[in-house]
Length: 408
Figure 1 (cartoon, one colour):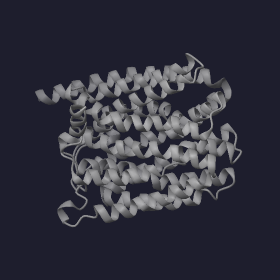
Figure 2: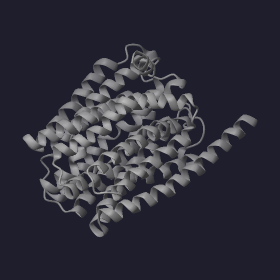
Figure 3: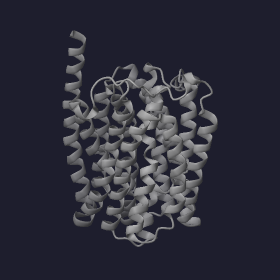
Figure 4: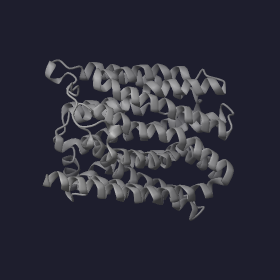
């Protein structure tokens, strides 16, 4: 047991103080993010919206995310990640508090757009800050630590959120989300405010190298792959919770407990898994491929049995795919980004998740409305098989480019 513990701790060694502080702030922020996993349930149960209406609201969620990540990436290259992250957290906190007062369908569409616009400016900035404060050899593990903080917070949030909904009401979640975002912004300002010029926003680079991400064919292929894979992944935050409730008649606190499994598995196993995969020298592209394979299997098992255990197996498979694919795909995007353009590259990379929110939730809701859950899961599996094949194509292109770079 002592050896296992030592090996686990070794996976965290060598990471900078700034990365640990960013992770702490990210944990506080995500621990309060209780609204998002229950948003589709809130819109149906408390607001009385139909599934297609929920789909359109989630499309506005995605549009806000798309605009926010694009602006966040641009601002990160001009004013620096530190200012972008702090401002995004503070304004996002105010937005969460205000969202609960939206009553009409169109009002909620506008409110969710504005909230996610400011909140998701955080995404490209946190990746660039991670790159700036990490040694090159520690990038993947630094990203994994940030993800661990996200998922530790996310694992606690749904459990507490489910209990609060069952015991109090949905509106309490908006207050908690808002206050924790503001608290995270204050802590970032206090704990990470640079005292010396050498550490103040080191990620701002005036000289731009390389080409624009919009002209980088291989990077654009990665973006297309991420759009379609995350369109399927986001079903776990809208359609799947409704499936738990409508097909298995689960209450919000039980649904929160299942979502807790995702976070706690990532907290316990992602860093050791990433460390092991790095030691066996798996390529970032192949890790991304295997992440999609496990994600596809997580949906496939839903149609194999009606037993409750299938929900647990599906969550475990999805989490395994996330642990393998996400840190390496993020690291791959950073690796492709030249100096002075990292904000733009990671902004575009983060926008792929935003696009998936635009079409993924809406598409999933309408598929279920038209064809039912069972056929929807089969459609998702087929799409992920196609995307996995595209990832193998990306692997060949990246490998070929690496060989050409070595021989030139």
